[in-house]
Image 1 (cartoon, one colour):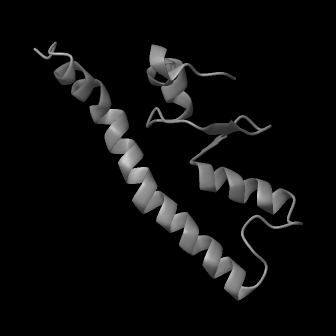
Image 2 (cartoon, helix red, strand yellow):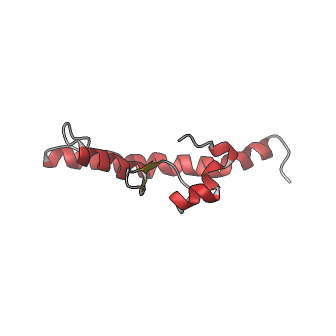
Length: 99
């Protein structure tokens, strides 16, 4: 399924039934249920096909992978979120069209 975020397809009632937060990605399972959030989807696939593991096999590799995932989530994800929310407003201000 392709969702066009610019058209707001992720906020339609049909999509909200699949994910109450209207966020992507989501994975539809064969039984009709859905999993959302990138890491949760990756952990699902990792559990289905554990070798090679996407999340490490030793305590050190598991810890290092989780460390990097948290860094991405907290440092990069926050900046991307702020830009996504505020970017259109900033663009209008920069062009002098903010009302």
